[in-house]
Length: 349
Image 1 (cartoon, helix red, strand yellow):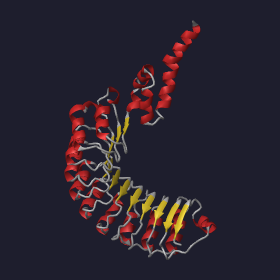
Image 2: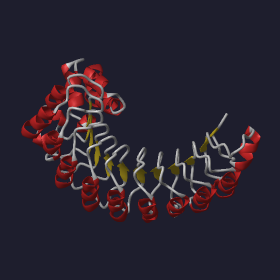
Image 3: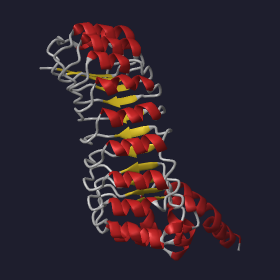
Image 4: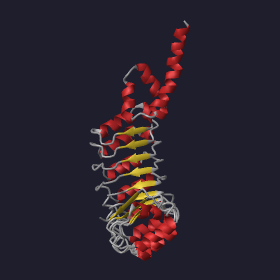
């Protein structure tokens, strides 16, 4: 009799507690597989809402129908994170279905990843944003269909966004940046990689009004000039800055960026107008720098390397000077003397 009672206690109390701990570390697909093991196990898992906060259909087929079906289930009524990165068969019609059928299930959604979902247009963005009132993270990398209209819907419906990835959205313009700047003053992360229609005017709106930015990625945008780069000094919280391919960035603009004293990572790859003067300003101003790429800059010499060693030797772990023909090759011991914590040093062959 005692053994039977102990077994019941084991099943009712011990196993559920263990499952709750273990299940939080399982991939979503394994968690769903466990539901099929037995009715008892199904009931146990479903009784813990914290296990059903994530929906991950990245790179999966029939993702649109899967998403609608999942959000129709009671266990996903409190979902916080949806990942559809490079998912197949997700279209506007599926997002419109969510609006009409799964409204309650999206009220707690905080993060939505639509990266690579090429069939989503402004119409779909209007539908999905209208049912995600507390969305904080929105990513729609590599979508060539959405326009400024999508950003209008986003800022109208989602008032709490702090992380925005518009990388590769080639149809958005300065109008989108103005909307973002006016509506998201507490924005912390912004990726504008290859948004080719942007100009100084739009970027300056961001720099003037989004003073809490910690990460700004404007990779492969050669249209900006020092007129905008000089305003980056306003970003006192900035830690990550990617300026790869900023062909109009001069030492003057870089000297203003040096006022971002909290910078930890700076990518100056192919910033061909930069010389020792600009890099020395960075070394003197950004003394917490851990990552710096000067790849392809022929106007820098050992002089800037010495300045970096003098000011940032205790922090720099990665330094890329590949293609910097003015910087001589060094032995490992010489590098460690300049940068004791260096882990990765790339130099021209």
